[in-house]
Every structure is written in C-alpha cells, then in structure tokens.
Length: 304
Image (cartoon, rainbow, N blue to C red; front, side, top):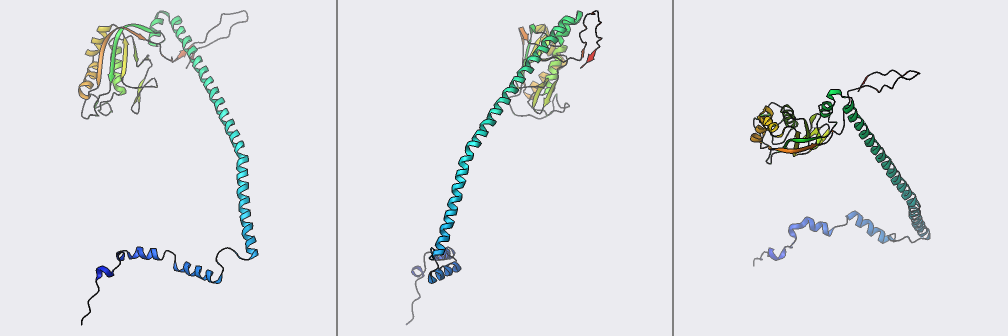
C-alpha cells in the first residue's frame, strides 16, 4: 500500500522563510565564545577570583579606581571657584572697556558737532557777498519755505524684464529703484530751480554723492530704505511743473509706466530742511593774530 506524502501545511515551520533571522536568534553567541565559556566553567576558572592573591589584586584595582575618581572630583571642586572668579573678572573688564569706548565715541560726536558748528559760522561770517549762497550750497544753514515733495518707491509686483529707459545704464530692468534713478531725480530738481534738497531727511550739498552698494542706495555713505522721500525747497508749483516737463521728469514717468515704480508729486506750502550732518573742507586759511611788539608768526594757506 502506497504511503501518503506528508502535509506541508502542517509540517513546515511558520518561520521557515526567515531562516537567516532564525539562525541569528538561535546562535546569538559565537560558537568560539560559547566553547571558551563552557571550558572555563568546566575547569572552575569562570566567575570571581577564588585565590587570596587574585582577590587582593581585584580589591587594589577597585581602590585605585575609586581614588582616581575622588581626586578628579576634588580637583574639579577646587578649580570651580577659580574659574568662576576669572570669568567674573573678564566680564568686568569687558564692561569697563565697553564703557570707555562709549565715552570716547560720545567725545568724538561732541567734537564733530563743535567743528561743524564752527565751520557753519565761518561760512556765514567770511563768505563775503556770496556767504549766504555758499552756506546754502554747503548745507550749513537750515532752509524753510515752499517746495515740492516727491516720493519714489519700488514696484509692488515681481521683477520685470524687457527694454526700457534703463536698458543702457548697466542696471537690470526691474521694478526696484536704483541709485541712477535718484541721481536723475535730484539733478532734475536742481535744474528746475530747487534751492535745497533732502532725501529721507539726508540733506544734499554740492559735494553729495548718491551711490549703490549691492541692492542698497547710499547718500553720502548713509544707507537709505524705500520709500524715498525727496523734499525740495523752491517756488512750489513752477518747480513741480518744470521738473515734470524736464527730461528727468519724463524719465521718472517712463519708469512708472514701464516698471510700475510708484511715484507721487505734491506741492508743499512749507518745507523744512535741516543742516547737513557734516561739512567737507577743501581749502582753509589759519587764523592770523594781530601784530604785536614781538611780531606775529606768519601763516599760510592749507588744503585738506
């Protein structure tokens, strides 16, 4: 009688398909290590030392380890106050040096203001018939009167491309206001009859420079942020009409039409401009004292 084959569904193990994992779990300890452990158990060498000499050696090692840990902890405790004291001294020194630097900076600002005040008085007193005009162009005196307020701001949208009024200027044609744009606005206002101009409160003089540093616009090395508010003192309505009809006014209108740069112009009944923050002296003549019996020292002209 033929014998029935075994039923594979009941004879095979559920984890037969994971033989590698099963082998790893069943033989977690390497065979060599298992054999060495069994051999030491057989000859009685496994576990704690049994001889007196071995026990003394183990105790000595434990005592030495405890001594090292104790000495390390004691040294750390002794050194902690010293480090804390040195840290406090360093913090005090930093505070003292910072206060000294602030004091020196305050003295520099005070001396700079004093020099600027003396320069303005010298321009007003020794300018002769042109003294008032020289002081005005140098920004040495505050100005107040009718004028024009011009606000220029970046476009709301994203950068735009294509040809436009700035295609030969070296700048990318985008909706951001560039230093060249402000240069043309200021020059157009001067040519249209403006007597004094300021951008975001920064008074312009005959020697002012409008430059770019990356994406920032600098006026006399001071960074400005949009919107750019240009205040010009002059004959209000005629000044505004003359600027809008000028080439620079048409240039600004082209920027608005092409790149959506936001601009607004309004006539102001009263515009107040402060003095320039600093004056640049190109030539100077030292003060000559009156002649005395012993004679006065000769002085000459200097340039800076």
